[in-house]
Amino acid sequence: MAPRDASKFGDRCDRALAGVFVLFCTLPAVLTWGAPPSTGAIEREFRRPAPEPKRPATLAQAQAWPAQFDAWYSDHFGLRSRWIRLHNQLSLGVFGVSPTSEIVVGPDTWMFTTRDHAVDVWRGADPFTAEELELWTRVLEDRREWCSQRGVQYLFAIAPNKESIYPEYFPQRFDKLGPSRREQLVAHVAQRSQVPLLDLTQPVSAAKSRTPQGEQLYYPLGTHWNDRGAVPAALALFERLHALDARISLGEASAFRFERTEFQDDSWAGRLYLEDRLRQPNANAVFERTIPSAAWERVRLFLERRDKSPQERARLEIAPLAGEPAGWSIEVEGGMNVRVTRAGAAAPKALVFHDSMGEKLRPLLAERLREVAFRWVPDFDTDAIERERPDIVLQVFVERALAATSLSTSPLDTPERLAAEFAQSSETLLAGLDGLSLPPAPKSSLEREADGALRVDYGGSALELPEFAVPQGSWALVRVELDSPLDTALLLEFLTRRFAAYSRLARGVQRPLAAGAGRAVYVKLRVPGLSGRIRLHPGLAAGSYRLRSLEVKAVPQ
Image 1 (tube, rainbow, N blue to C red):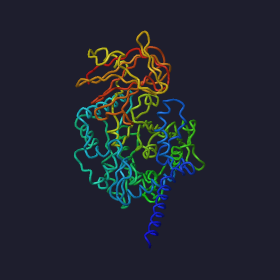
Image 2: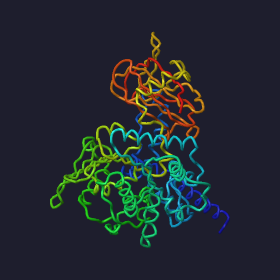
Image 3: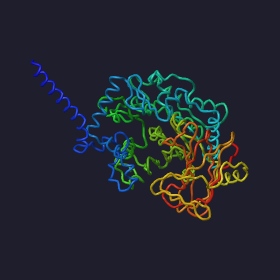
Image 4: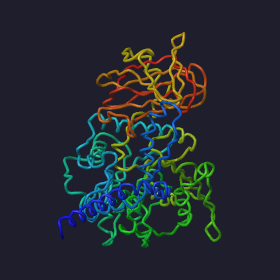
């Protein structure tokens, strides 16, 4: 080839390469408007896509527009799903690493969550302090005492993390440095208290050795236990609950058998766009039921629907179908809460507070109780207990909740008791309304009135209190006096030395606030390592609030 021809050939190649590069860069942008991804493609990530930003009409809107556009474009650019799928395939199949910071991947592509410092907690790298252990024990004792005063039995149960049952599948690079928080708390309670604490690790671990080869008690691609893991946990709960109330019958493992199913249930495969590549074994528990499994399936399908109207989300009765046994009812009562009733059952009534680990226990527990209200909430809800008047209160939470939850309040801290403690204290940590600030935000403003009070037009932005130090061996007790335009709740958010930035892990305490003038609210912050500026939400709904006074005192632990 002549030099001139070679030069022309090289120019053509350069132009072709440049054209391919331009096409590669512009095709996703063109497809963003021509063929955007469907809403359902993003909802598999357990979130809704960012909305397209509107044309800004004010300076503040113009300043926020670039970030809003970036969020929208990141969710809608062309070929998004295919690029994510390719990235995840390469990460898992070629490099053997997790494609997301929310999970770590072990042998045989077993996946483990990193939420709530789960890795550090399992390693023993994020243990309880001595003060935190005492606080957990004291608050659990107070919950039992509060229930006992009302003739109610109380039990707190810990569901083990997946890595506590299957450490052999946890990434080997994460070595154990010491006991986990669960191990610390169980040992501390056993030595120092009579708190009714049930660690479900032992019965679930014992069932692992009896599990058929190729089957597991937890979902390899998910976070939770499956039916095979929930059954031994339920049997252990029946045994402990029977000791509290003999009307609850015991169960036998032989009464359950398991049928294989292709339903994947809890799995990261869909979120990774790899549901056709990543599969896991699963089995349904089969046993003699009062409430048919088909009814629970209808509950599950309803709760998973993302198009429920507000009226449907508020209440739905799962009525027996033709041919099903009579005498039972299931009602979905807002959010993820469920109530189950069995007519004529000679068993106690229970109220169960739980997190996501309690979902598999619902059908099992309901078979042993006359009536049970399942509340998917993270706290000990005294108002719900007063309304329900149960015989038993059961709390079931996953092990990693010991790092995610701060037991900052006690049910024995009644307004009358806190008012008396506040009056007795002579150590003031903060007094007056000077130094309170309100970050700029739409629909929020702060104005000083002639009598010294602060008028807060609340639109979601919280007041920030000046920093103060809490003496060793003391808790901070906050007294706020304010006028409220409606019945709502006052919320205090706080930071600790461990959680030093506000995020979804920010801790908070709510207290009821009635409409009217001069309402005084007391909040004791049982918070080890309290630090930084506290955030005060005068209410949980938009409105005009009037802050009359604010004072913080130190009270003995």
